[in-house]
Length: 234
Image (tube, rainbow, N blue to C red; front, side):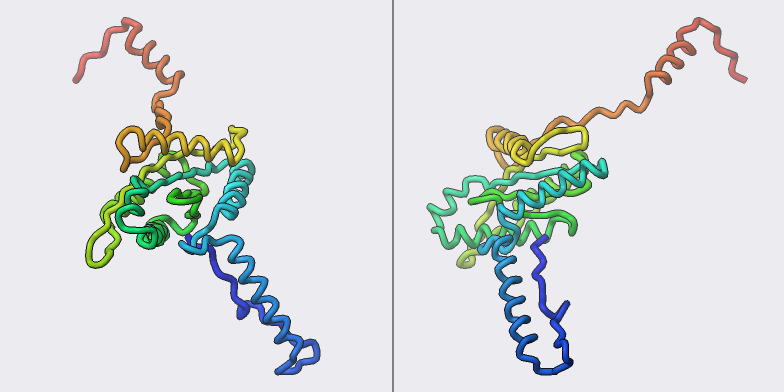
């Protein structure tokens, strides 16, 4: 999601003596607007209008703390445009910028409302997925990959097709991992996606789900391995 822009209309200053056109409240409102604008500039990437690297680090730290308190996992997707240098070389840097804007719009359209898409730097993006397991994150990443692949940027009535490579990692309350280490893990899977052909998602193996417990397995073994003759069927 894009960072929400704060508005003065939500909490207008009130004149202490009840004047309608109080010059003090007008000045306070103008100063408040300037502070709001500066705050948004600090947190927002000016090109793509989504969260920038600084906000990304802050948000990921907050989600890690939330995971530690609640026990609910946080997943992270690192995403990189494939062969982006060729886009700049063939189409020019202005079209390259349009491609970054186009991709950020697709991200905002595709991710869930609680997810936090960010521009990590250059042609690399990050998506923070709160309260999301690895198993739940994989289809989100695949939906992003497929949406970008099927949605070219139209430049001078010609389609500019793009693909992306993605790496996923998940933080749980049983880990002692910093923001830097979590990003490094996701980046390693991103590099794996690049090295194995691009336009794909890589991640750790999903943990196997053992439906039958050890106690149940032992009971079944004793039941069927005891040598007791089965009853005749009616």
